[in-house]
Length: 381
Image (cartoon, rainbow, N blue to C red; front, side, top):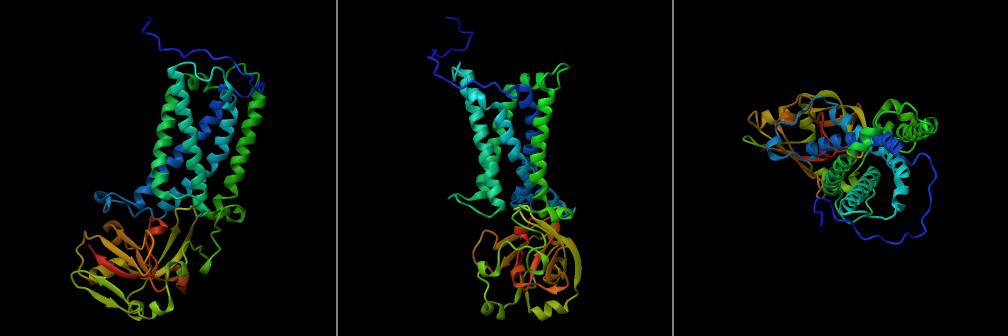
């Protein structure tokens, strides 16, 4: 027995299978589309890492996360959602170029071939699930029993690992077809196909990216949010009613600041303090964002009044009693940034109840879920 060769599986009789005569189900077309798809997936993966660590930093990094540029999270999360949506038509185009291989015979030629097909199955399944559940997350529709965020995080690593395995296995074929051959009879047809796929990607991007790239908001036909729609011209994800904020609770509202010198403030006392105005975006994980004009008291002034040491972190507690972000921790880079406010007004008007009245946090380069609304307590850690 020759042990240098991998074992081969027994031959099976060939069933009647379809015959594919399309000229673009070939490695060159798959490579061309694969380059575009790979760029979209890589962009979504890198920006997803940024989003994850800004939302849930490890303890050692809590005071190291940067608060500048102030528009940083708006850019990265907008790219994350836009590249994820753009990847969907690219993925289906890629699958179209290679699906005839599902009907190859024999289906498995060797153990190595079986492992290759298994890795492709994991890749296709994980990427499809990642993109489609991510799209439903932008709609805030969760027709599944698991928690989206940790599942999305874990599945991203599965998909990226499967993609790296696939690239490694197919590296010789990818290299052979990366450049256009000098004599390519199918070149015009391939260019037409790629142009049609690019037009589809451009169409879905143009009609959704306006939710974060506001110069294109007039083309925002299919995104779940329009940046101008909502109280005071700003969208809302979680309303006061959904958070359990009632008029009775608001009548007893006080801001408590706990630290070496704890104190409480009424809303009138907060308004009597020195007010600062900033222009900052609110940028949500679902992909929408918009700049707004905020006015309120600097968080750093409230910390100084409580005797907080310079490197202290901050814990912010909302009046809402349920939800993953009813309590939020803020590192010193954010808490001491002069742009970080306990905001009392939005676009020149008192905060609407759905935007966090009587007071909410607004900070630069920060996910919207961490811009806590209906704040009732600040605690120096």
